[in-house]
Image 1 (spheres, rainbow, N blue to C red):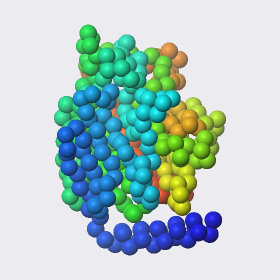
Image 2: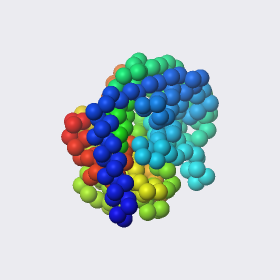
Image 3: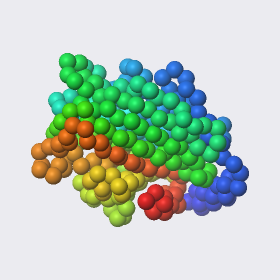
Length: 297
């Protein structure tokens, strides 16, 4: 324990030095990926391949270990793709689980708006498509990636969903912004999942409304994790959380619709959803997740 404590103090000292220096974020588009680096070290890729179910970020590398804090396509849940946005039960289509014929969210214009300074900004336009059916939704996305310290990386997410027709989303646990954790960080393997109220684990957080949740665990000599913060202006804020000790969390109202059956949105309506993703070293307190949420507001 003393060794781990000394290592974390060293990382904090390096973080202070890091903040005195200019952090440089770069991005380059290579085929169907946009690769992002922080001070020359690979951080993440925004993947928008034509043979994928939806665009997503993978890997999402931790600031201490350099290994991804997320995972994808494990044998039990192959439809979990790291850090992603999708939805099932949309006008009869499935824009979440495997099977492209059931529905896809297609990237049509992923591009880099800014890179080379203290931030990278990525934008995308997506169409929700299914064979034999009219597209129910199109969305526009903006991701702003920054690194306020050596132990924290931020991905600020803005997604505007525009309804191209009346949309009905039946009750579903497969919905909206989500993360699948790396297995070694899951509660099942000794990790911690905690919400803003201090409740921990699946039993204490499932279905509970909370502005944010953090998921972290020990990795070698370090502790790393990822938090998702909901912006207070989001529809349904603060949404209840669908959580799993095996390594999954998602803020979603779709599993708890107001009428207990479905959620309806009229043609022409737009929903702006904003999230802050905090990829961090240390635990929730050390990463100052609460403070980052207060700044986000």
